[in-house]
Image (cartoon, rainbow, N blue to C red; front, side, top):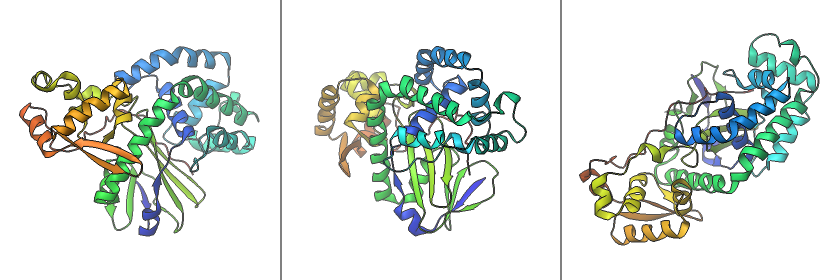
Length: 342
C-alpha cells in the first residue's frame, strides 16, 4: 500500500485548497477513461467526448501521449505538477510547458516502465501536453467552473468542520477508497505497493477536491505533497444513489424530502443548489422550513454555513425506511486507479 509518514505538526498545518489544474486533469482522466461512474458523468461525457476525440484525431501525438502519461498506475511527473495554494490554472500549466524535452521523455519512460513509442521520441512533448490540458480546461471545465467551484468550496468547508469536530483521523478515513489513518503518524494514501515516503517536517500537505470521481497523490520535491480526492457535487452522482422515499415525499413534499435525504453529510445552500439544479432561493426556502421543523440544523465552518440532519431528522428518515444512521454515504468505487508521481 502507499504509505506516508506524517508528523503531527505537519498534519495540523495541512489544509484544503482549490486547484483549477487538478479539476482539469481529473476531467482529462475521465475523458481518457471514456466511461462514467454514474449517470452524471455519463451525461458529461456525452457532451464532451466527441470534441475530445476530434482533438486527438487531429493531432497524431496527442493520443499516444495521453496513453503514456495518464493510462498507467503512475502519472508522468511533468504532465501533472503539484498545484500550489491559490495558483491559477495558467500558472500551474506553465510548469508543464517549461519542462525540458528530455525530462518529459524520461518521465514517460518511468510511467510506461519501458521504452517510448517512436512517435513520442521528440522534444515538443511539453508543448503538446500543455495544449491538450488547456483544451480540456477551456472547453470542458471553464464554462461550468463557477458551479464546480461552489461545490468544491462547500466540500472543503464540510470537511474542515469535521476536522474541527472529530480530528483529522475521521476525515482522512473518508476522503476516498484507499485512504486510512493508521495511527503512529502513518497515512495510507492508496492501495498501490509503493515504498513508504516520509513527509519532511515543515512540508506543505494539501488536500484538493475534484468533481470527477477520480483521485491521485503527488508531491514536489520534499516541500509539497497533495492528495486529490473526489468530492460530493456536480459530477459525483451521490444524490442519484439516494432515491427519495415516496412516503416521505408525500409527508413533507418531494423537494424537502430530497434535501433531507442528502443532508446526512453537511452541505451548504450553494452546494445543494448545484447538486439539485434548483434555484438558490428555492433551496433556501425549503431549508428554512426544515430548520423551523427541527429536521436540520446549521453549523458554521469558516465563512460557510452548512446544514445537516438532526436526530429528529434521522428518526424521520429511519421511519421512512431510508435512514443512514447519520453516517456519510460511501462514495462510488468506480474510478481510474490512483496515480502517484515523484
